[in-house]
Picture 1 (cartoon, rainbow, N blue to C red):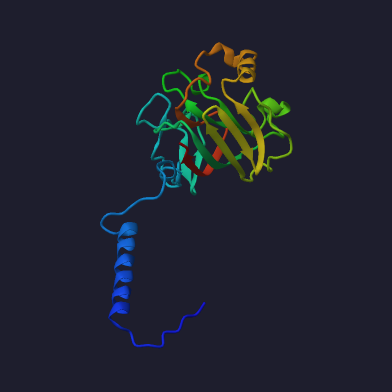
Picture 2: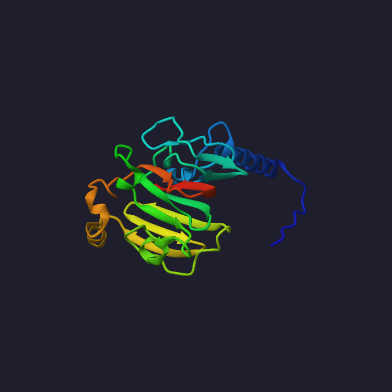
Length: 245
């Protein structure tokens, strides 16, 4: 609707305009002035994606149970994190509870590796406590003969469907969600596993697996994230994480 003013601007209209301007200034100050008012919930404020690997250095990483010390065999090559020699698993300095993790991985022919989550720093070896997102050349490696140990599986416990890996030498995109007991594995846009930690089904599967020998397996509510040295060359890139409340 259009309103036409046909009489001169008088004192009352001038005061009205002034009042509107003052209100506008107050509103602007409330949004971004000296006394800002945040309307973003605290949970949302901490839910931004951030790099887990910066593409240039191994800052933020260390060896398992060797705080501040990097294992040999890991390096940065052309913006990628590469396992090219023996040294041991590489883990984050920081520990995480609930998160979404995205990364890309590439293996050589017959290559085997994995990504661990919620690693208990007190256990002797990472896999004694941490569930694993399997990274593998399904076509050649013997673990590819079972869906329980194929790429995208929750290693040894929950199988992944066939047909979702890319050819050796190509990058695969992966996503790992750990939100309380709920865990999801994704591979190249397809959900390959979904499970509930500590559920009756989980407990049964652990009891029937080799993990039953390790009481700490899958029990941690928070811990380090790690990439596995399984003796093969493997590369990771575009690793980023979003912390969940």
